[in-house]
Length: 87
Ligand code: FES
Picture 1 (tube, rainbow, N blue to C red):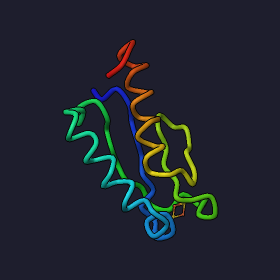
Picture 2 (cartoon, rainbow, N blue to C red; picture 1 turned 180 degrees about the horizontal axis):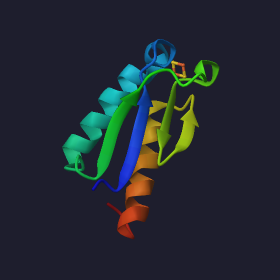
Picture 3 (cartoon, rainbow, N blue to C red; picture 1 turned 120 degrees about the vertical axis):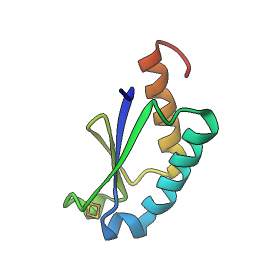
């Protein structure tokens, strides 16, 4: 079972505002570090929060309008917490 669950909004607004790039970055980050089993990445349709987008949730917590690189920091922090230290 994955340590953390990440859901990327792939509705048209979030997709065009940057989630397509964010998804690529996340997948590359996880693959490079062999963390694909630790993070379950799924997509979702529009969550009716388009104005706040691009949106994604990590463990049910919404992250809105974040730079893609900042999301990687959050993932790293969450994985470190889940493992009791750095991933
Ligand atoms: S497209 Fe993401 S909240 Fe609407």
